[in-house]
Image (cartoon, rainbow, N blue to C red):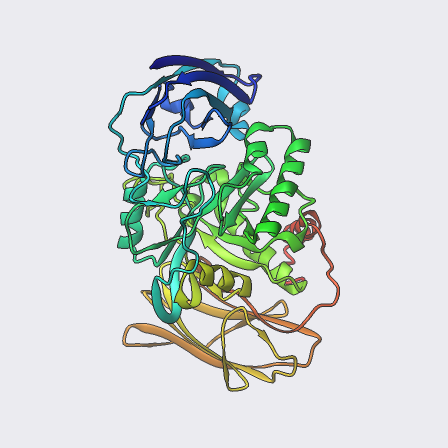
Length: 509
């Protein structure tokens, strides 16, 4: 069995194109080979559906090999596929064009390409691996959310925003896993553009299923997936803003119903900033406050300022009584030897690192810790920390009793070669932690904060280099509560932020 299907890419092309092929009974493998030049390959999402209309494979072509396989198990099926029986009948190849980049890249050009389908077994290098999460569909029936990877009660290091060759990353999952192990990550969240993984390589690193919902109105990660989001079909096929707004709302509703977490990514970054202003802040579970700091070397992106704005946005949200967990994301796409612009460092998983406090590491515990905001984010260091409220141990992100009188803190910064500027922000007012000391090569700081009796108080700890570069962000501890929010939608808080930023009134809360 062999058939060649043709498709085309241009600005006015249909976002969704289809072709069909017949599969004889008894087939064990389907192989798909495309001839699309890599310069345009990232504009194409390939979807394969069986005779019943069930999705069996989805992949952004991008930097991956042109040979894609659907087989019986994880070792003969390409990433993004669901291994298993291949029924005879009429199958469908769907091509979805990446609307976010279509006009910018094509600029009047038209490119034709073909996909050749056969039942011949092919050698592949981008296989899922031995651990398959699915059983015949895109539901994660075999993924164990209650599996305990490590028993210790401690801070665990990981990354909430990464890419591989399933979307537009350049690393295979095997190489990405080795990098995560080398950088001593405890957990790793693959968040591909509008496609999801169906399993993973063999590793002791805990892999949490995620996806990056990617639209012309902004990007958002979904954490804790139990299967492929139904809303991705609309996200892939729609390119008009009005339809996409409905798709985003449908995705948020699906998150609520299925217990997934919704996290807005790089809200102020270049052409990927968040533009859907009607997003209700109550629907945000997390916010990415620092995205790939090595990207700052690209002058057009103004990435350093975008990250600074994201931190300030988080402060505004906490000041308004929201509990939206701040996380970091490397957004790593590149090979280890590559650099953005004149960057001195590579973009790698774990830079920034997001530390999450868990009583034993499991996927379920990780999600619960995000909901509790027991999280801090760093670059180039880890922070051993002790926090006490009126003599009782507490964690970053904790809600403290209303009548709490004082907070004692003690931090040890591991991995720094220069003294950090350590501070805390109390209800919008920044205070320097002046007693930074160095002992045995480790910078230490400790102190006590006396709390005034307010209806609502928030205190955030942070650290920067002497020239203002990001080092450390801890989710705030709070006392009391806000009975009424000033901001309801993303547009409202963004308007406030932009006004304060323009007038250099960044301590206006």
